Image 1 (spheres, rainbow, N blue to C red):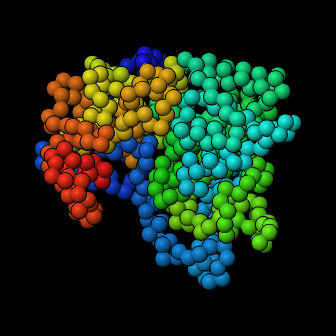
Image 2: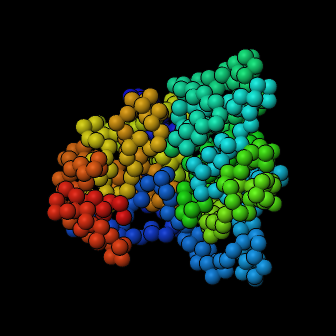
Image 3: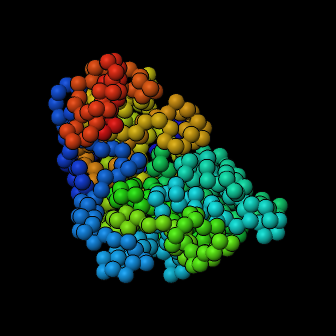
Length: 480
C-alpha cells in the first residue's frame, strides 16, 4: 500500500478545525434532512461531489427561467425555436469562453466526459506513413473513461506511473521520444487533469511541451479539474478538453468536448442521424463539418444552458476564494483522518502539488462498503466506496479491495468535514452501533428503520425488494 507522505500538500502545523467554514456558493439540497437509524434527522453531508455534484441554485433558477422557452432548435421557424436555438448556441460560446477555447476550436455538446472521450477516440487519425491505427499514450492512473476508449480503434500504450510526479513525467517524455526514434510516433497523449481517486495532478504544461515536441497532441480529462480550478485551452496549449456538467454543478445531462477542429471535422460522425448531414441520398451521404457533424438528433438544449449557467456562476467567484475554501477543507480532512489509528490516506505521488478536494482512505479491519454504509446510516454522510472506475491504479497501489472517497466542492460546509472526521474516529474507537450485512454485494443495515422519502415513488419497490427478508429492507434508502 501507499505510504507516501504529503510533503507538498500539508502545512507544517495541523490545520485548524473548519466548523465555521461556509460554502462558497449555494447549492440545491444544501439543507436536505435525512433519517438516521437512531430515529434522528440530520442535514445531509454530501461528500460525494466528485461522483455527481449538486446543482448550483443559480443553475436551477436558470433552468426554471428557460423551460417555458424550450422548443426544437436549428431548423424550426417558430419564434420559440429561434429563441431555443439562440439559447443553445449562446451556451456553447459561454462554455467555450469559460475554458479558454481558441477561436478555431470546436465545442461539441455531449452527454458527459465518457461520451466526449469516446467521440474523440473515433477521430484519432491513422498513422499517415503506415495506415495503422493512431497510437495513444495513457497512464494507468486514469479513470476508465480515459482508458477504455483508446483500446478500441487506436493502438494504446498504458504506462504505469512512477513514484513521483517528476518520475512520471520523465517516463512519459522517454516513451514519446522512443516512439519518434522508432518511426512509430504517438498521435495523442491522454491524461487526467486531476485524479478522481486522490485529487492529485500532473503538470499540464510539461506534458503538453513533451507531447508537442514529439508531434503528439494532448487530451485532458477535465472532469475533476474544471469544477475546481480555472483552466484555459489557449493558455496551456492542451489540444482537447473533455468534462461533464454533472460534475460541474449542472446535473442536466450535458457534457463537452472542445478542441482542434481538423480531427473532428475529418473524423467519422459520432452519431448517424438528422442534423449531422447536409444531403442524404439512398446511396450516399454528405456530412456536416463543425459541431453539427457529431450532434445528430435533438440536442440537449436545457443541459447546455444549465452548464453555461454553472460556468457563469463559477466565473463570478474569485478563483482565490475557491482555492482557499477547498484547500482548508482538504487539509483538515487529510490531517484529521491521518491522526486516527488504522486509517490510511491513499496517495499516488509524494511530490504532488495543489490537489483538488478529493481524499480517499481506508480503515483497517473494515470493508470500504461497510464504512460507507455506516457513515450514511449513523451520521448522514454520503461518500463513495469501491475502486472508483480506476481499477489499474488501485491495484498498483495495493488497494484492490477498494477504499472510501470523500470529496468536497463549492457547496461544502466545514461542518461536513468535521462530521466525517468525528464519525471515522467513532468507528475506529467503538465500532458501528447498527448491524450490517451484505445483500447483492452491497453493505446495508439489517432491519433498517429509515423511511423512504415521501413522493419518491419507491414504496412499492421497497416492498418488492424486501420479499419478507430483514436483510433486503435496507437496500433502497441509501440509493435515494
